[in-house]
Length: 310
Image (cartoon, rainbow, N blue to C red):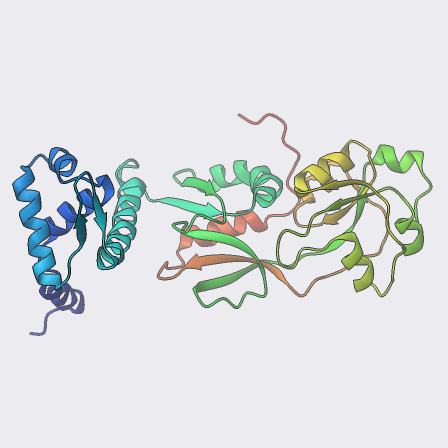
């Protein structure tokens, strides 16, 4: 009977990789820059570590370290092997981190921008807890390459994994009720442009500023005088809530603010961008029922304002 594919593949790897013990010894030397410290860390003699590394070099057919008087520096071949080892060890550590502390329950690392996390995920955290009480969720940043899932805004056609549509977006002007009570509600694009505007830097691909929003509606604004410019969208929204002017509202991010009345729409003008929000699954990550439930929670509308739930 034929062996399972995974078993045959593993035996193939073992024919190529000469010794796991030698690789562990090499990684310890490369990380510490010292055969002595590596030996102390591994609980073996320095001679044993040297023997392992020499065996690797003979098998590899290249020198892995420049053995200097006071240090050991990686050669080009050593750097290539160490980079591969480092990534592999991090992946293995990630598996232990997910399972070893959770009594068999896997954690999910979800990457998103700080604004999406604060404005969309946090208001629905209680819903996640109610519907997925055993879920161990770790919120992280888009720069985390080890994240299981990430929220991306864009066209959805990325070749390094699988994108699943989360929801589309609408962009329209918003302000606080107190600001609207003190000012005449603007009815035209020109009137909006001549009011105190709060703008945000276009730090993400597809992000709209006031200038790009006006132009998308076919209106060329005059030189805009902003009452405030912010690097972070969350700061712009906080300023709008406090009554400092009109901000561009990304509707999916502001559902909680709009439902609670902290913010109101200023006019009926709206842009529906061609880009949308996607849940992006890292390559090789299967789409499970837990991920489906997590997406359903993130899609949930009409979330009640937070009232100190326990």
